[in-house]
Length: 106
Image (cartoon, rainbow, N blue to C red):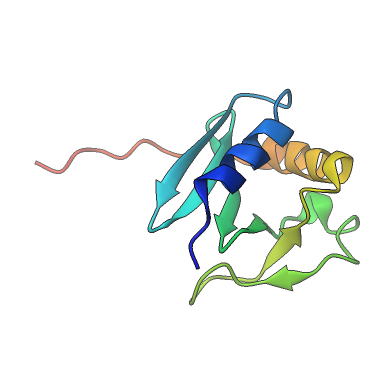
């Protein structure tokens, strides 16, 4: 079951104000970028964030899962716990580097 565009737009609306928010469709699912950094992966209407050290203590009671076959284990966020999600995403954004630009193959 693929993620609906309505759900992606709802997530982006909820995250408004924590930075520049945009999304990109990838392989039938979506990546949400905060300040041009890939922060949130949404697969099958489930919100995943990477396991990073800066949020480990806060995420001890959070569910984990795999967004797709072959992926590493991620934390699962419930967007209805808005302040918690915004706090976690802000912390992840602070330690995530901007993606490196790819050189064109010629």
